[in-house]
Length: 226
Image (cartoon, rainbow, N blue to C red; front, side, top):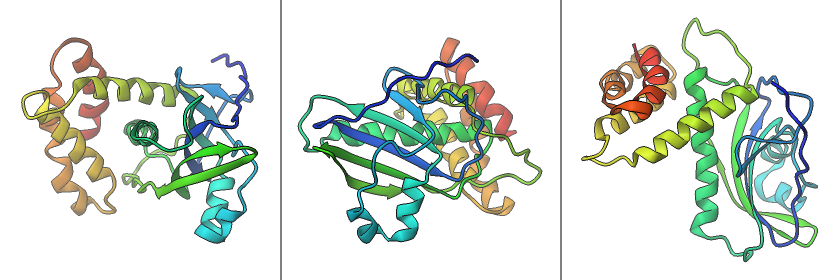
């Protein structure tokens, strides 16, 4: 896939959400940063000078996890107040959802994952909310595969389809529950722990509706569940 490097900037007044994955197996084009979609960037290094104040706040180990991340999904909001809003937190959750659905094409090995939401004040990049992303667990006999730009774009497409389903009891309810149980199963360590949460997804995957939505989700979920 041909990729052109694009300029990524953080300006005074910007707000940002970063999903920072540390020590993850990747195979990216040399020309980064680039866009995954109109809102989300892909980077392979921390895009700002480290705020040393955070080292004393979160500890040296976690500070290194953040600043030495080699896979970063970034969303930047321009021209807004520095005060974080629900939209800013939602941007971070969208990054976490993309990375979660990426696991359906193969669980990505990594050391740590952190979600940071913050703002730019002059030349300082202030992280205002920091949370850990729970690890997913490989299945016995899995084949180690790198995270690629193509995999991220396919996960992004799947995330947009999942959001468009607008889950409720009356609307794709069984599929929503099936997806939840599948992802919960992938977070468990052993086969016995996975058995109960994963079983319902075999039915949920068959409740995705019709047309484009069903085609987009069924291939990803049904093959993994059965």
